[in-house]
Image (cartoon, rainbow, N blue to C red; front, side):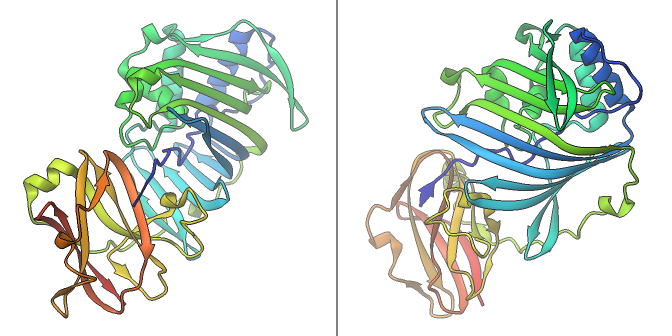
Length: 392
């Protein structure tokens, strides 16, 4: 099995969009920021085409993971819809994110159709809450506007750019979580290590006279010594608006959610609860969408779809999960029809594979004929769990 680190930067929250009418931009940095803040609070509807780049660098690695994003943002009242195409390396994935007042849904393109799932994010602020939080940080002196103003031409329009920096000593736990959200950590399963390790937050806003932000840049840095071995030590986001329309007519149907997927039946049967929970947080089977090749695509785990039903068209079968404590795992496919293991009893084939703490995913060719099977998991000689699946 190939161990992997999946950088949780699926979606950027557009915390810095804003628009308004008629205001005259001064060269005073605080006035420029306040113009944006008032415009963002007054926002009711808009459409925005944008291009973004995210770079996250992990501890102990000389390389950074880069995600390019092309998409549109629709804002209507207190609802937001992003239509995005993410490019990581050579892999592209279309994603929609719906933000409502108290709910978040993420939809992915599956075989030409949008399929939506409601998600629980570790950090979530809707648009109104985000603007109120920025205003609160500014008024409390926790977010400081620099004195310098830079003039920049973006898409043929002159913007005034100002710098923002966070005063860490004045930030609460929720304040830090909000800054992590704006820095690309919205989908991180557990942000607590990053809250404690936050070393600096800086942002740059390039604003039109009407308060519209045409470019935003956000940088987060963390104390590497306070992070796990594969922790993210820095995050950089640069987002540029290519085109926009203030208060457009946005069809209501854009905000109609696609049908949620039919959940696959639960396939995991835990046999030895105590042993399983000692070593594993999760363990499941998954498939790869057509066109994704683990041998040539380093980011293949981003595309996994949990399932317990495979077809002859599936070229691979994937096991994935999260390990809590280093473990020697033995696993084997059990044919329910014949009542025997495919390829021999795994308990007699050696010490097994070593799995270290953290997320993992392993893919192997699917060579099983049609039938009903079980993937049986052993720690030592003890059967700890069974994953049932079908090949059709």
